[in-house]
Length: 148
Image 1 (cartoon, rainbow, N blue to C red):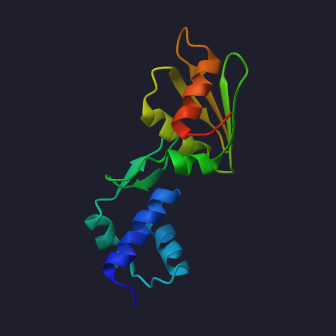
Image 2: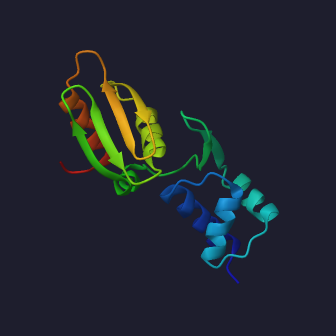
Image 3: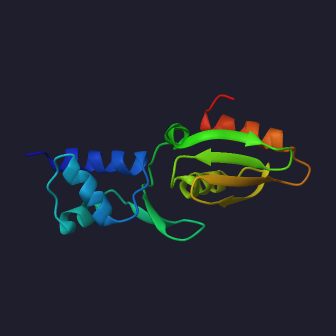
């Protein structure tokens, strides 16, 4: 039997490494990793970890932790490409990840960015007034730590 500490460490890792929208989804991920956990225990664990459901710009929520590490290395795994067309920055992600990545970009509050629009696997990122799209693309790459 695994300890409470090990289970909570696994919950931290799961929330930090992938989008987790519901307790049912988190519980299924834990079961896949060998943790038999009830919904009540999971609720207590989430409360103890001070996890909260953060709203996404396009609707819905995802769990996040107050002491979560910088998500940039994790986001890099979700991003397939970052390009610009002279006017906009176009970010291609893995299927279903665009809203998560766009939310992280919005939370970074880049002064070079005016706003984001996210679909399923594509993000359009508009540069702020007088900011070249190439400069914004470079800034996003720096934050995500992704090479050109």
